[in-house]
Image 1 (cartoon, rainbow, N blue to C red):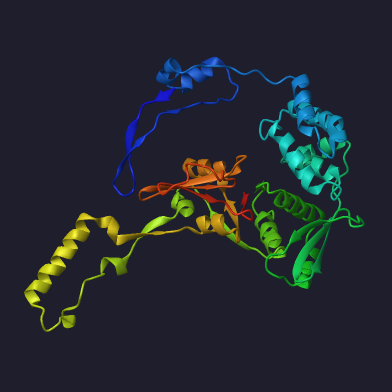
Image 2 (cartoon, rainbow, N blue to C red):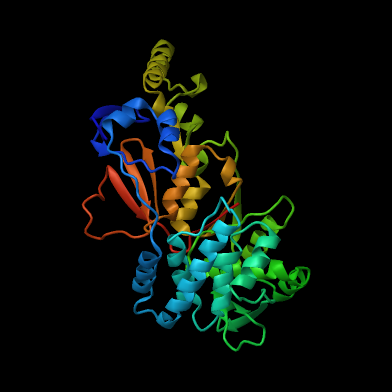
Length: 393
């Protein structure tokens, strides 16, 4: 469906012509009558409609074969395919209606496996991808048995110094001679961390291992669990373990987009600039002229109110640039759709985040083409810091 050109207002009052663009809609598999009752007749009339059938097992096999090609662990392809099919059939058999295994999970497995190959046992990654996506312990244990996996053991955490750099080492299992290593940003006191780790049960420690593997792989993480299950505590503890500050956003249906994009605030200093006090009059200045001048300044400010405001950058934007903090979005399921859509763009293959300021559009990207012609005064492109990381609850 082609949308015609139209003018849209910018925050500074300027009108900009919006270019033509295409809209593509995707819909979950339901019966045709259901869709016709929910979708506008205009959309149905002027849009092309195509139904994609489920991918067949032989097609999944060829996709996995291609993705595993040239990987160090390419010999694991057949075993992974078998467990992928077992998990798909398990979901159908148990009538699991949410958080289905998809082709995207193949890429997640490969990404995690590449970063932890020969360090963390592949069964750990399989537990992450196939089993701990489900909510009920009963389902998790049942699937673990069907996949012939071992229930998770206890990872071991230790600190080590290499010259002046403190490093967190994670062993799984404890007697493993190889380890996952994460650089500590700001030096921590190991004994305090060890004391806190002692209070965790086996599953909580295993969750820390999941967080560490996802962090190392630069895959943003979602933690799900009931209230008071320890989600926030584990994230706080992990951030403390690697010496990074945690910024928590509590989201709800009324949360404004400005918590991400920043906002314009009243600039009293700018508003009052050039307005003198009568006591500051020079000998050569007439009081009547002074009053007229001040009145004129106020009138000009009234006609151009934007001159009385300044843009205040959000902590979120600052973190995109510096990577100094770790972000936690708490209550993502309750957030307004515009916030969810904005955050979704950060989870794409090339994460991006766009804001509009005055006469320019600023886009943050993980990967920037050096020869890009899009990077100019009106369309600025800024690189997302490699250390930027975000958790979702």
